[in-house]
Length: 474
Ligand code: SF4
Image (cartoon, rainbow, N blue to C red; front, side):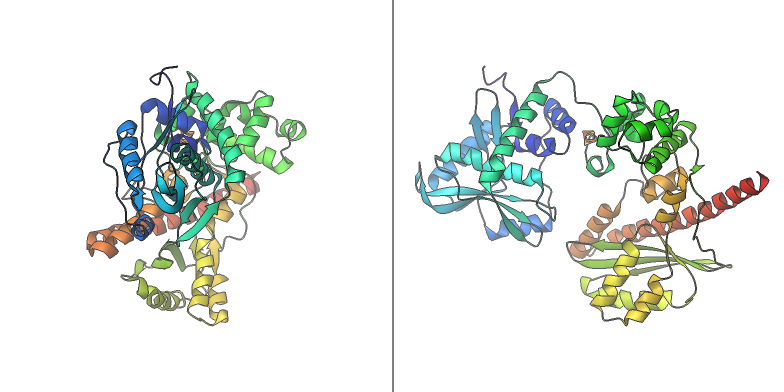
């Protein structure tokens, strides 16, 4: 087969294939070449091995490879974003390790050879990280005539982890073969929207449109890929079909439990009817004349809680407090300010969304040696609205994030596309530039999160009252 007809498989196709075969297919068809994200971690690791970057423009891999080969032949101490290219009968394989590091030893060029280092942003060793490292090691072995000592990953910290090639190579080759098979197909693999893997995917808008056109079951929260396969065996592939299904039939003919079967059918009904439906009475939702609506922003890489947003609602007014650490070292000061603010009304509930806020209160209490009884008193007042909601109500939403829920309730964020990651990026830009507009943007975003939490609380109280009325009328 001539090189022109063979698919060109780059590291990213293999890497994303682990998460979603459809993404590799779409990227490949559109010729998309992802560039590594800029990050402090990346800059930090690259600066440990100052090196040369071959001159080429993706996707001119041939030029990139020739430039990289010249540097390797010359024995450059480190090569950044070099290109490794190997032609096989089935494909042209292209790897782009972040750094190629020269080591003593022998290779076809002399008494040195190279080993690959990949910089990754995740905290744990993921299969796709290992596959990419094994891919780079294999390519390098074909090019330099000797295996690298090891493939290596630099995770945030930085933590350097060696990849066991004996273990990683066979599964990499299997994945590569499956990936090649997918890339040769005429049609993209079936869409399946999954929040955890689709959230950061550039194809999300496109895939969501396709899924909505098909009324695809993956739009029903709780339908995982494994559950979808089981539902398919019962002939259920569209939202309306699941909405009309008998939960007991699901229970008897699949591995789903009785509660899950009920909840999935009810969830599909909520989407099909475009309305909120009760699944259980709302319990343990304290209501008080004074309440705090609380949201935290933190940067895991800086290990810093940089913002406490608190909306204090009393019968007469609403006041918003934005306790921001303008420098990382101010984290302790804003923690003390938060304690005083939350202790102003020691009986008032503290409403938040998901467990991050009470967990962070616990962590900050330990870090700053706050008396445990003081921390405990605050934690006992915390009310997780997300937990209350998902136990009792299903909504016509695709997921139960604060964004999706509050949007359905009619709430709008001033920055509609912002999220926690964007907020942290703004914080880093503020630290680097001192430009206050970044600080203002993240404070505004956090304010909207607190307002949205308040909005959700009021809706829950109203929904609960309607339920009570309906029950007493019935
Ligand atoms: S949006 Fe989801 S289904 Fe679509 S390509 Fe991305 S990860 Fe795959």
